[in-house]
Length: 459
Image (cartoon, rainbow, N blue to C red; front, side, top):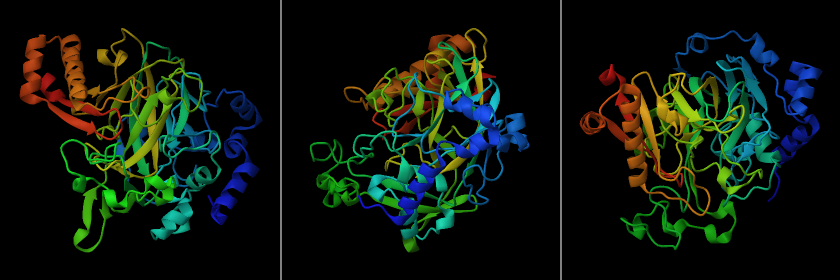
């Protein structure tokens, strides 16, 4: 692939500055040495001097409005700890294993602010040059993130394979003090602030709800003419990602809304920022590109869970499988419809602030189901989750929504029986009469369903 001048400049900066130079300078030589040996520092100069916001202090979440480009480490950083997406620390297409070295550390109950990078605009089918690609969409260089450009140009932790690797840029892992296997990590999303005034929605051949089947025909239930993107534009046989014929649509932020298209095809919809990927390490394999660590399918450790309710004000509970939990994030979303049918949400880089709390068995600090399966809540609802193949990524993937639905219902019943003392038959009747079960997403190989159980009903 031809290297653009922008990529050459970014690569030179990465190679010249080295690993987390800014953070080491802020923390001092001692902290830098700790990072080099795998013991991450507990704070940075930027986060230590930033005042905690009401949201961070009280736990009440806030979906941030776009107020200007947030380059790495610049602007308001409310968390106790700051973590950027450094080119030699992120994983592109994979999530950390239980053997991964943490790049940051927080106490249980502490907060961390993370500058996450969206994969859209930097992927191989878009030329792997965000300055050039976004420039073609009319985005000026000052609105392209420096960390996105550096990752596109300089990522070298493993050789990228567009057709095999996941697309997501994964930031972390974060060690949470006191977390041990058998615990639950409670992840409270406090803030999600757009770092740029735009996002991207992509539809790619062979992916999405209306994808062409692997054999070249139409999937069950639709005809070949109904496949999206249209079969006639499928250029995957070339083996050149930029010739695949994939479709990416730029969405621009206007106030609390996003706008796509023009003329009679112009649409406006509300922003709803959240992280599609939040997880804890679960894969046992030590290889960075082990199939079970692929970033696409969600697992019992969370990951690419894609539940639109998990924005500010929510809590996400995950069973811990590694010392320190090893928390990570990625796939920042500016808006997503339940189902995520075209393949992606409105993908756009976010600055997220999270409170991370260790919940011990028997403490009552987490729903009982969460010690073995992902679970969530908002101010209004409890959210039992079902996945079609939570231990997937090896030997294919089950994408049966019926399986995901059954598991979500069983997890809801277990919660109502064990945590609220309801008779199981009564609980089953209640779910049928009053609870909603929603398709989380149908595009991540392992598909998901989640329930919405109103807290007011259980008061």
